[in-house]
Image (cartoon, rainbow, N blue to C red; front, side, top):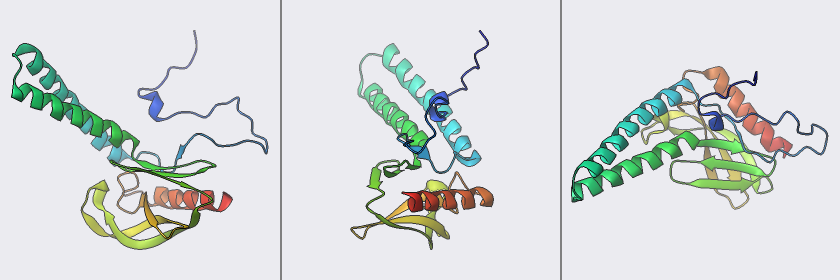
Length: 183
């Protein structure tokens, strides 16, 4: 009866298993987010959740109350797209485990094994402002792979997770570099 209550949206912040082994054979199989969701990202996602809920509710009410029409079909399509983009927005970020690194963007997931990673660098670049396609001068962690491709991560100066939090930015950068060294 005295079990601790799960937080709201508990699946977005999973806790590690307290009964898992901690010896030399321990393997981190679950993806771990490099940067925790910052206050700016949480505020934007919550606002998006409220707006999407209102849009989806309006589309459902319009579809149920009116006879079949092109407008109701269009509204349902827009609402479904908004829900899909919102759910994907909650997942966006850079994740690591013992096998490699995963960079989730709004429209794509890139997986790179640690064997294929040649370097993780911090470099000056034009970074997106709050994740939007508005490039501003800044710095960003990038991952170089064996084929010569460069993959930008979500560890950058104007990230919605790290904006106005220089200590969190340094910790995320160091954490990403340490994962690359330890693999």
